[in-house]
Image (cartoon, rainbow, N blue to C red):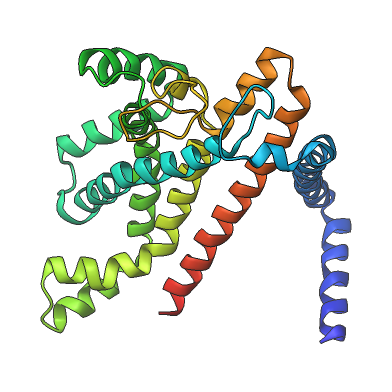
Length: 288
């Protein structure tokens, strides 16, 4: 095996010598990958170095006060906001993608309109979504600053992302899978839910993971819809702040910058844990 690898690398070196342009492209690609990894490593290291020394038990007390500036209510609100947003966006996004891929005919004008709409939505700044959520959910519908208003606003934000990733995942499933299912006598709906969706599950989960990351890191849209009250809401119609909003509020006040850095560490850990759980579920689905 080592001999084969040595020969392979020698062949590559000879190819780069004969064609210097290929060698330059290889170096550029390798440098880009190295810079990307270095930027990620620097970002994580900076957050940990600035935030870990300021972690304390007072930051995890159940109730927030101006003395302990506890992030526990924000942690509970973040998890609640992720669950509410996914419950609203994931079914709608997956079913929309199923319609576009499995049911809509080629050249359908409705498909073109839906795709243009999703591409437009994915390019709108989050502050615009926040203003829309405030004008429609908070004021027009009379929900006030509430977790539900924030969840509906965020679900609209992540809906295009989930739709497009689900659509690409469904398109990647070989046509032979569908034809084999039809040949065995399965209907359209059974084929989709028993054959196509399980095969596309890893790609769908990738979109869900990206949606979770956007929900956790969102601030502008939530300040206009969910509010900034540092408490655990009694219901979905009550106001509350997430970790990202909590960190922004502490840093913006200028009085608790160290605690804001510690909040960034917890936020980073939560994102890593959620991504790991999503990847674990994806592997289980692939094996099954």
